[in-house]
Image (cartoon, rainbow, N blue to C red; front, top):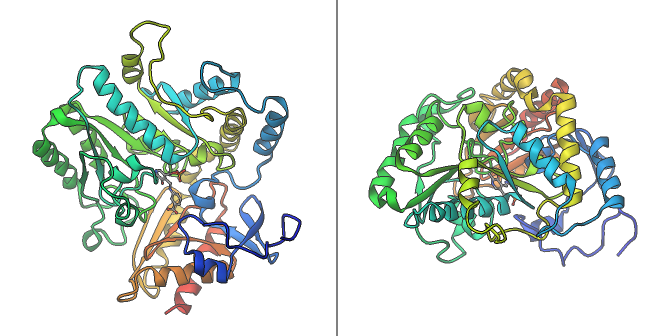
Length: 442
Ligand code: PXG
């Protein structure tokens, strides 16, 4: 092993990398050794423009001073405080800030350390709430095909990405799924919300009829499905889901791990679509990706249902050693401050038009079968190579990296989500690079 943070260890075998083709990667590793604002520095010294905000999380750009300093200060002042039966001020301060920022009606915060943990927390809150209000027969959870809700058992059960589920046995019992809303033949090359597909929300009522509403606790959806390749809901779709939930006493959970903290040009997806869920799941952009942390927001109706019984008893048997960790709380507070000072949570509204036009200029480029965009998110769907799905997009990913732009691919879809500090010149560079790459790959 060599010394120094910028050198590459000579043995890459021990680290079993997540969601990575390990053997392929280790033959030709791609390493980052530093980052600043919109750029990474690769191990060979090249600057690589970040077209994906890390993994959809570095919304304020890299190594931002307020955040770095807050973490350094907090580590020296109060490194850890027990999360159970003890508190520290910053966790409370952050919860107040989050409630202020969130849509009206979301008034309480549970902390986690990731999106996956936030999902499990939300599903458990939903089930326990139904029991607490005397609706204990409501044990079913409904998700959506192609949904991504992290990798833990609840999340992969309600999730709908087959590869993430099929190796792991029976998962949670009593789960069903809505159809996804990706109607390529009708909606290809839509700008913003696609026209067709609102009627797919009514499938929810069909599923409710099948199982009976009295057995269903909650519906969980991403406002915009991110990980599966940016599936944007048609106008009115989420409103309709909200109405159906209300009609049948079912809780609505929004998984805003990607759409939260400015990605759509509004603080949350709930703001963009004008639909307030009962429970809102967040992570990633909460701390700018710098320290693991998630936050689950709930309505007072849900919270208050637990605040009964003798006061000396724990109301909800759930939590993590690191719930509201001091350093994570400090990072989140500094992140929210950075977003506020720089207007980043609404920057997508100013730049969205430029972003949209730039992306859609790729229509007609080789292999492109669809382009979609919303806020500062974009997707370019490629025709898969027959019998070798994912290969074409992955080749584009590697070539773009070699040309100095980090993109992300899922299946044969290129997904883009730059830090919200992105400038027009960066957008041009991302799109021009992709255009060149598409011309070079098979
Ligand atoms: N919910 C949603 C909607 C997500 O997008 C999670 C939960 C899980 O978060 P954690 O922090 O446990 O990973 C996610 C995560 C990609 C990509 O490139 C997406 C995610 C993670 C990594 C890569 O699409 N989403």
